Amino acid sequence: MYKIAIIEEFHESGLELLKKHSNFEFEIINDTSEENLIKKLPKFDGCTLRVSKLYSNVLKHCKKLKVISRHGVGYDNVDLEYIKKNNITLLITATTNALAVAEHVMYMILSISKGITSHDHSVRTGLFKEGVKDIQTLELFNKEILILGFGRIGKELIKRCQGFSMKINVFDPYVNSETIKSLGGKKITDLDKGLASADYVSLHIPLSEKTKNLLNYKKLKTMKKTAILINTSRGGVINEMDLNKALNERLIFGAGLDVFEKEPVNLNNPLLKNKKILLSPHSATFTDECKIRMAKQTVQNIIDFFEKKIDKSMVVK
Ligand SMILES: NC(=O)c1ccc[n+]([C@@H]2O[C@H](COP(=O)([O-])OP(=O)(O)OC[C@H]3O[C@@H](n4cnc5c(N)ncnc54)[C@H](O)[C@@H]3O)[C@@H](O)[C@H]2O)c1
Image (cartoon, rainbow, N blue to C red):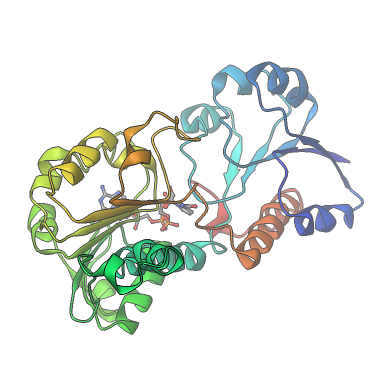
């Protein structure tokens, strides 16, 4: 019998799947304080993980732990070095959420470009056309988007951008130009040039030492004054204070953020007061459909791991 800790509950469809397998028993752990995790986790063979952190301070107490199954694809909340040294396998729900994130990007691009919140407010307050006569709205047709990071999400996004007849540039040093061309994009190798000509920039790169603060004031300054920046990857990839400054100085037109340097966002973070930013609470994957896909895949990965039939694309190397 394998003991599985469900760290932070997820959609019941995943737990239903686990209940059907008699060689697994599970316990839900919603108190993710360091103290509680150190107390609870040592008895488990495997665990699932959403956004809480599993670093060596906790993991060093978990001598039985063989696998961590992430409910999602990002894994900057896990101490990779530690798990590699200690033979703990990290799994992700690789195939389940790219589509939902790509749709969320389109929602942000459209909402900002079409001034959705202002238009809605104008009708509700009786101002009607008077309320939006000075609001600038934009078309996507023939506009240039720079997709930064061309993995699972970037590849879903490109299809949606084609539907709007956008010109698509891709910056990803690890993907060749043939692959990008075959999917309808153009590979660019000079990030600064790509940023300078883009009408839209959408970020789909992991957070790492290399990508931290990649978009800082200097880079934002190179962008068009009409440009819209969307970040659904990880908060630290953009320097938040630099973004706030760039928007206040009208260096770019607007931004859509689903992710933040610190989550939940501190209420005194100036980004929350900036009307040029459209915000969502790291909820790009919160569609009904995606929640079910992710919950089932998180659990299926655990089952497949212990039954020795795990799909390699789910394993973080
Ligand atoms: N908002 C959300 O709810 C949500 C959901 C899923 C994923 N994410 C985030 O989105 C990121 C992308 O997800 P994915 O599934 O597409 O990942 P992925 O691993 O499939 O793709 C990431 C791509 O980024 C490229 N890359 C790495 N470093 C780069 C750099 N410095 N410059 C340009 N490209 C670089 C890689 O070559 C890869 O092609 C994840 O790392 C995760 O943090 C957020």
